[in-house]
Image (cartoon, rainbow, N blue to C red; front, side, top):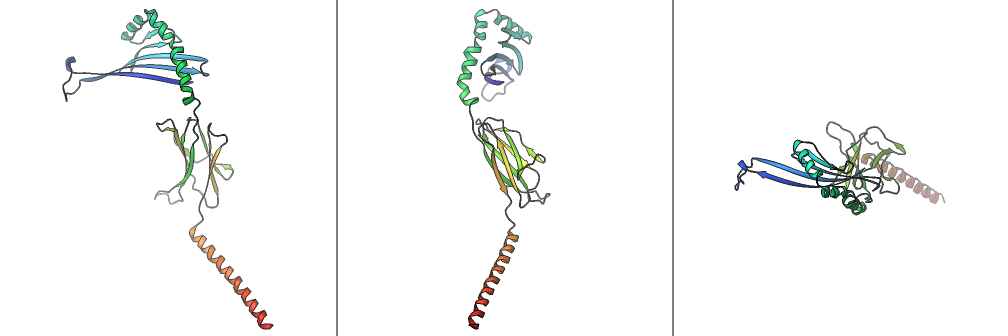
Length: 251
C-alpha cells in the first residue's frame, strides 16, 4: 500500500489572559492545530482511499474517510464540527471528490519520481580495525550507499559459500535526499588466503552486484619468500657460471 500525505499546520501562541506578549515576554503555552490530507493506493489507482484528519495538540478530534463518506467526531468538540460539516451538502461533495481531484491527480504527478524511480547503490568493502580488547585482524564492513527504493538484500560470501551466520546489519537509513544507506558487518575475522564477497540485490540492478576482498599478503613473509627466491636464483647462476668455466678450461 502506498501513502502520499500532505499536511499543513497552524501554530498559535497565546499570552497571559489572551494578551499579545511583548518583546522578550514568555508565552503561557503553545497550541497546535493540524490538518492532514492522506491518499492510500492499492494496485496503482485501481482502489484509492482519501482521509482528512483534524488534530489538536496530538489528539485527533474529527476525520473524513472516503470509504465512510462523511465526517466522524472523536471528541465532544469534534462531534459538534462533524455534525456541522455533514449538514453542508457542498462540503461533503467536495470531500468525496478528493479521491479523483486530489489523490489520483497527485499519483500521476508523483509516480515517475516515487514509484518508478530507480537509483543503483554504490558498494564498497572496508576492514574495520579491531579494538584493543580484540587483538584480531578486524572485521569486514560492506557499505551500501545512496540507493532507491529502500528494499534491498545484502549477503556475505566466502568463496562461493554464503555466510549466513555472524552477520549484523543496520536498519535501512534514509539520507534525507530520497536515497538510503545500509551497513552490513561480517563479525567473523577474515583469514589470509581466502576470498570474501559482498553481494547486493536491488530492483535497480539487472543482476546481483558483487564486491570482492582479499587480505594482503603478510609483509614479513613476502620479504622472506623474496629473499629465498633470490638466493635460489643466485645459486643457479653461480652453478651455470661454474660449469661454463670448467668446460672452457678443459677445452
